[in-house]
Length: 179
Image 1: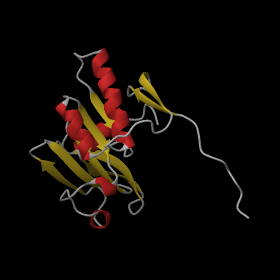
Image 2 (image 1 turned 90 degrees about the horizontal axis):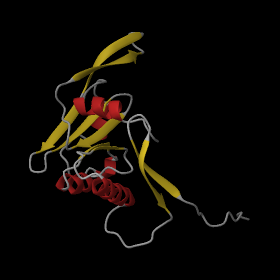
Image 3 (image 1 turned 30 degrees about the vertical axis):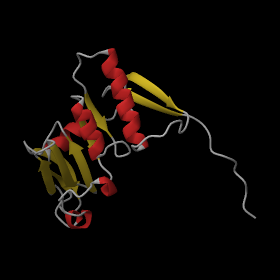
């Protein structure tokens, strides 16, 4: 016999926050209410940024998203509204970008990266090997200048410097306010 757990219900609270964790805009999600042509994450960010631009139209916004929200179409749509976006990316949303596949990057040394710059849309896609392979998209930051990151090496039993693309450093610097 399979137990009955009922229907899932509740609210999701979407929050835009500063890098220090101060909420600047919030939206409650009660479930699908209208037909939309975009993914939920794209819809949430676009709607929130439109509201924030309406509140302070003179402000230049720079948005950092995790992989639930980030996609090439989100970045293109917000770029048309003069909003800068940087975010981690799910592997299945990379849409024909000529980056090395995840398995090949994972076999490389720690700190290895591959990138591609779309010159039409000015979107930089980066795949970087750290503890795991991370993919980022940005219309604000690129790979250069290459940064150094300290990581513990189990082989050498000490902290070593590895290469870190600039976009990764900026993403780590400005995220962490809300999760």
